Amino acid sequence: MSLDLAALRAAHDRIRPHIKRTPVATRAALDAARGARLFFKCENLQAAGAFKARGACNAVFSLTDAEAAGGVVTHSSGNHAAALARAAQLRGITAHIVMPESAPPSKVRNVESYGGKITYCANSLDAREAACAEIAARTGAALIHPFDDLRVMAGQGTAALELMEEVPDLEIILCPVGGGGLLCGTAVAAKALRPGIRVIGVEPALADDVAQSFHTGRRVTIPTPATVADGLRTNSTGEKNLPLIRRHVDDIVTVSEDGIKAATRELCAGLGMVIEPSSAVPYAALLENKFPYAGKKLGLILTGGNVDLASLPWMKP
Amino acid sequence: MSLDLAALRAAHDRIRPHIKRTPVATRAALDAARGARLFFKCENLQAAGAFKARGACNAVFSLTDAEAAGGVVTHSSGNHAAALARAAQLRGITAHIVMPESAPPSKVRNVESYGGKITYCANSLDAREAACAEIAARTGAALIHPFDDLRVMAGQGTAALELMEEVPDLEIILCPVGGGGLLCGTAVAAKALRPGIRVIGVEPALADDVAQSFHTGRRVTIPTPATVADGLRTNSTGEKNLPLIRRHVDDIVTVSEDGIKAATRELCAGLGMVIEPSSAVPYAALLENKFPYAGKKLGLILTGGNVDLASLPWMKP
Figure 1 (cartoon, chains in turn cyan, red):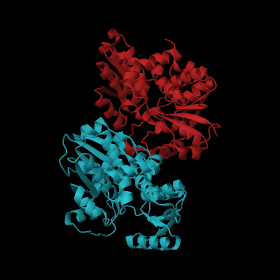
Figure 2 (cartoon, chains in turn blue, green; figure 1 turned 135 degrees about the horizontal axis):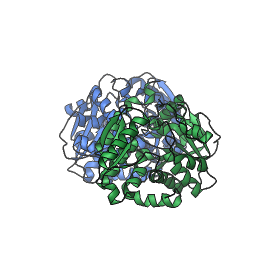
Figure 3 (cartoon, chains in turn red, blue; figure 1 turned 135 degrees about the vertical axis):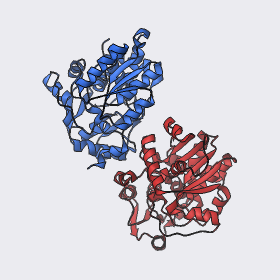
Figure 4 (cartoon, chains in turn blue, orange; figure 1 turned 180 degrees about the vertical axis):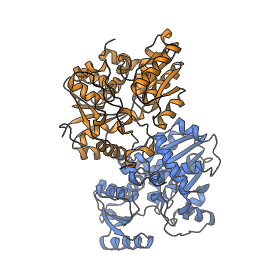
């Protein structure tokens, strides 16, 4: 398959019975505060609490029966894990989930609640990939990578499809960047439906592997990042993702930890919703004036709402 | 007027252009945790962030032009204040708001954002009533009491009308109790539409003036209560409210401060919404098993979402 509008529409049809059509929220007070018109796609209200349900369902329901027989396996810091466990449960197959020992308790519980089989490993990409490979070899499970997978990217892009269906004249669309799965799907959807739109990825400065890769053109790997945006703690860009990002994305900007914390506070209060810090990363780019947006219509994808309330960043100023 | 179903339906028609029809939220995980079916009426998503928009609009739009000419005046710990300021702004008249100096900053900002004219006073009912009387005498403003007013009660009851329209077979309906305005409107609506329903008010044990008044039959006044549920810090029951409560309400139970904090945490996480502690008081009664509810269908009114995030109770365990 190639990642294009047809693939995204096919993904949307495939996953529709298994995901929610999430609302697009607007708030006059936030518009006034930023001097722009903001449209928030509320994937925090998605099944399993994050946009990852989209990509996971598309991947799992794309498998042939023979491919699905051995179940699926992945490594993930949390939301992809829960989403894959849920998708596998819906299809009636086993999901093996490799998680770092440092994963937040709320995300562990989320995986368990969908019947996922968890294997803990050290908190490095090498350790995760080795554990995945071992499980795949032993069980025949199909690997569903959290972002370096065209089926996953196509599923993630359906959030932007829905957003642009409701607000077709968006001028800028922003999404948080971890490994680049959501960004690829979002960019392909947005540019296909409205070629003049600007697509901007926003990444924590502490986890700027994709920004560096985007600007240099080669896949940069960084030490495991410690950003408060725990959903974005990837340290390298997907192999399939980088060329798509270079082709379809206009810019990737980075934001500070203080900016992410302030944005999380401001959005929780202003939207009246519980969002995880990763969701607030695009709004942090507005707070830190990373690009001109005065008077524009902006779409922001709120990626998830799975958070241990006690760990929310305003707890530790 | 008398407070009956006709009055509530007239109020609903009167305020419909000025309020939101709020959603009824359900969460499988919360149902499983409590062993019951819970329907949350989300007045935290109401205009101005609380159910108070309903009563304030009904009162303000019930005024004749002559009565409205001098504006309106009230005293309130916050949500009624913002709601009255908003209703007055919609009608194009002045709202004078008497607030205690201890009012939370988010509620002060809320009043100011709707153009309310704030007069600060000491944190006692006497001081508030004196300030209100002085303003009314000087300006001709009409007093809109936060709860001891049939027009206000009729407006507040429209939340229960909507809830019971969507879930007509509720077996129990719960609402937080401050001075008894919401409780009266809720009880009249619920009993009129479904006589067999149980209506239970829930009050912080530290602010149990209405519970005491209900059980003794006379209006009990207590010292200004220090409950974390700042929307429920009233210290006496409305004169018009008590007989209505005695006639239509089945019971009033009280909950601990720890219960309110735990309920606030659990609902913010479980609903994925920011609610103020007052909203969580009915759920605290479930956590503390204040009455039998296993397997029942329960309606819970989430009264508001206006909260300084930094002051949420899980901050100070």
